[in-house]
Amino acid sequence: MNYRDWVQQELRKLGTSLGFRYVPLEELEDRLARVRIGMRKEGMEALLVVQKMDFYYLSGTTQDGLLFLPFEGKPLLLIKRELERARIESPLDGVVSLSSIRKLPNAIKDHHSILPHQLGLEFDVLPVKDYF
Image (cartoon, rainbow, N blue to C red; front, side, top):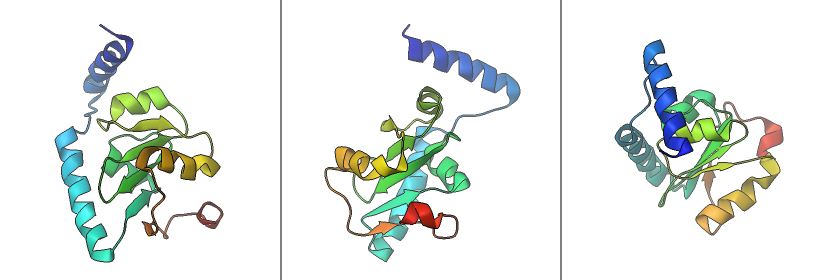
């Protein structure tokens, strides 16, 4: 058994004993599909999820990070800390480290090939400093 599988197995046992349940991939895919319906209506090429509750709802992890959701293609989970734990908690494939918000454009380009022209943001919780 490789290290990731072992850690995931141990964390699942511990989480189950404490009453924690991981979000199944099928549930996240359904949630992301519903968000993309709204994105289509608004003409968004991508969405950047910052707010903690939305982040958890769409990624399955509570780690400190951001979620980049392109209208087409796989989401990118950008984690500021606890990368390995995020990879265990979230069933999403694209989970990478983000050491600084300034590196966000490059991370998006590496994942999505281009930067979106229209990016949806959560203005109710997004700090102005991060927006600029």
